[in-house]
Image 1 (spheres, rainbow, N blue to C red):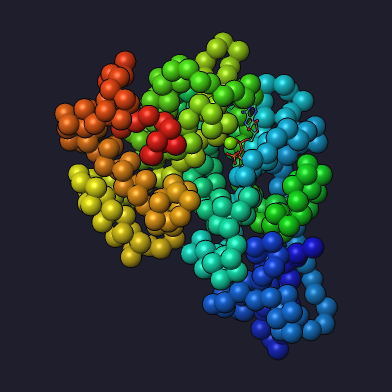
Image 2 (image 1 turned 135 degrees about the vertical axis):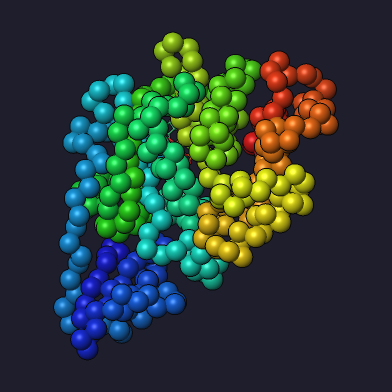
Length: 341
Ligand SMILES: Nc1ncnc2c1ncn2[C@@H]1O[C@H](COP(=O)(O)OP(=O)(O)OP(=O)(O)O)[C@@H](O)[C@H]1O
Ligand SMILES: [Mg+2]
């Protein structure tokens, strides 16, 4: 099993931190991170003698009575003894930056969308965790889940064992000590609505995300597997894939598609990690992600910042000529198409 190793070699402190299925190690010497990632054999060559494991930090994200319920690519969901709530646990970016992880994945031909630990998954989890942390402090619109508790910590060995017995393959699990977030939220009935009754709750959620958090969302189609139904018949988006748009883009709203693409390219030059974290979750590739996000930014600005009547016509066109029953905004896109597939 992949473990964190700490060793003093020639008076210098060396830490080897397993990443990417434990295939590779991030090495830190005297608090300075080496630029490359190393194989297990490399690390064994670097160290000699007794190897100690880092002290485990307690993480109480799960309770004894929690039972595995279901999981997706991003996280694992447990039910509680209380039938009205569930706990969702996700991994967050570790000490390896998203940019460095991305490069390592590319060199090794690994999938950035790889379940639990791919760089895109970790980036998306960070945004989603931020949203749920704030929902725990102050609830959002009825179309987003009620969140009762939010915690972040470092995964301890018991939690890791729970995840293994829940069926998460060992090689998809980072080592103990890896940052995780867990939140307790209301339990709803997962559904795949195929009616237009999701239009209003979807709009409500997207409006809230944009206005309150500067966030945009995707994966909100009825069949995305991300909707739930309350007993009172109301729909809830249980797993919104969100990203927060960097302040520099919000401050200068682009009003053309090229402008939006340029604004995103500018972040790429200024802050690579922020660029990847913002763009990657919105497409299978970075190029597709940037295109989708540029479309969204443009439509947001045409809807909220500088309303354009031509935009409303465009949306009606995209809906096959049918006029939506609510005022048109960027939320008027048919959800089977970019940007909200
Ligand atoms: N609040 C909830 N109430 C009931 N069941 C839930 C709830 N949240 C999640 N689930 C169940 O757990 C499954 C996985 O949850 P979720 O979709 O949040 O995980 P994910 O890993 O982010 O998703 P994915 O990668 O599939 O998009 C859901 O498909 C659903 O069956
Ligand atoms: Mg899901």
